Amino acid sequence: MLAYSGGLDTSVLIKWLQEKYTAEVITVTVNVGQQENLKTVEEKAKNLGASKHYSIDAKAEFATDYIFPAIKANALYEGKYPISTSLSRPLIVAKMVEIAEKESATSLAHGCTGKGNDQVRFDVTIGSLAPDLKIIAPVREWDMTRDEEKKYAKVKGIPVSTAAEKYSIDQNIWGRSIECGVLEDANQEPPEDAFEWTVSPEEASDTPEYITIKFEAGVPVALDKESMAPLALIETLNKTAGKHGVGRIDHIEDRLIGIKSREVYECPAATVLLEAHKDLEKMVLTRHEVLFKQQIDSQWTFLAYTGLWMDPLKEDLEAFINQTQEKVHGKVRVKLYKGGLQVVGRSSPMSLYDQNLVNYNIKTTFNQSCSKGFIELWGLQTRMQNMLKRKAKKQETTKVGE
Ligand code: ARG
Image 1 (tube, rainbow, N blue to C red):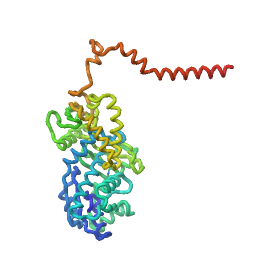
Image 2: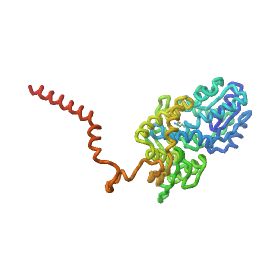
Image 3: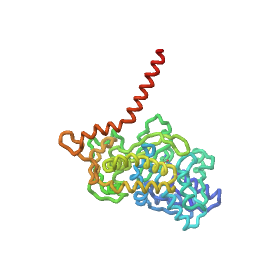
Image 4: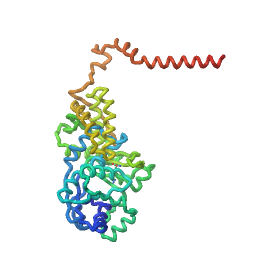
């Protein structure tokens, strides 16, 4: 059974598996929002000799069970990447394993290379869910270069699209990852043709747009007063934010296997929702919760990025995260303008922000006279240590003078 995307690698794989293993190949395409024409993908698979093809729409499940937990965890790998590709892998594997059982498949094949993170996500998740299935990852083993692969494709009558020539693209509803080609020069600005979901900030409207996102228990439930299901909300926001050029990401990323890579993404909805969620949390959680949660969030994100979605630590961390989210209700107002986004307003019934406490003009319940004593104790050790340092310095200078 082969995880089939319709792209060059996995198309070559259909033929390769038939030849090398004289295997019957069943292809599976799990739709997480790739925006490919699924009928065309199926026809292509069948034409190349797949004995059966499964096409599974998992978009709604992806939104609810994979993306929403990532929002609660403010998941941005290395502060930048909303782990869109990473999140889709365990779901794709779960769906494949289900079908493999039904079809009594003996092996699962995928098109991951030996240089990336995806191979880790596929293999660890397969090994956790179905340890008896053999894993075949031919792209990791064969020593065809990309050019040799294209030649092989030509000989075997496998169509090669022009888009596939330029970039390596992976997309789902949470984001679009763009790699390879000219992007490999980390010092060069990505050309406009790398982007599809976002307009360039220069081309974006001169009029800012304001949107209000309503959160309940840490997840978005409405856009501008309109209640929406998770999938519809994300898809709508991708369009709205993309239209203003919001969500382009360009950064240097540390892959699990040690390679540093230049990664380019378009993640309009993710960029807006993560920023809004983080802002609302700061209004309703205590300082201690906010600062501690940053460590939990970054550990959760690291597990999801590095293929350990099935590790029990992830669920342990979620027990903490979910408890904090019980308080995360409210509305966040976001301004979208020429490639940028700004949170410009927030309100919550659970707010710890009290205008009465911060105001300098009115008589408040905050007792300022307590501050003097507080500072005395807060700085106690700092003052003591600096006193010692001064003393030591003085002794040194008198020694030199002797
Ligand atoms: N670097 C990202 C990740 O590891 C994106 C990988 C994108 N894959 C691709 N075939 N273009 O999650």
